[in-house]
Length: 87
Image (cartoon, rainbow, N blue to C red; front, side):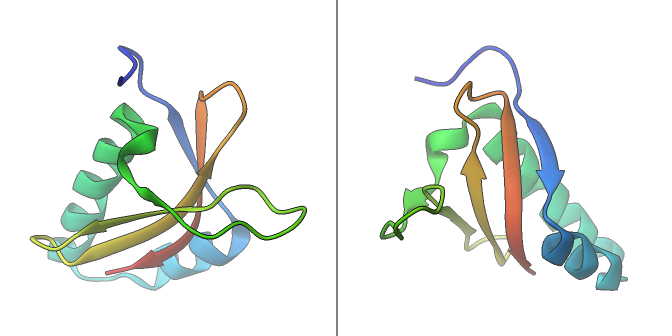
């Protein structure tokens, strides 16, 4: 069940570099929409197979906006760490 509070979004170094490379306003708008979805309901993405010692990664794909995010959620569910962006 989604929380009534949004999780804070932070980016890994790799995702931050990907974000800097996005120059299209329409791609930024699509990414913003996907980030809002994930911040409102961090469990919306599908879990990916676990790797020993690594946080459980989730994948959120928005086919309408053509956005894919790989992310993990902190233990208290207050922060979503975006590890990979594809727009």
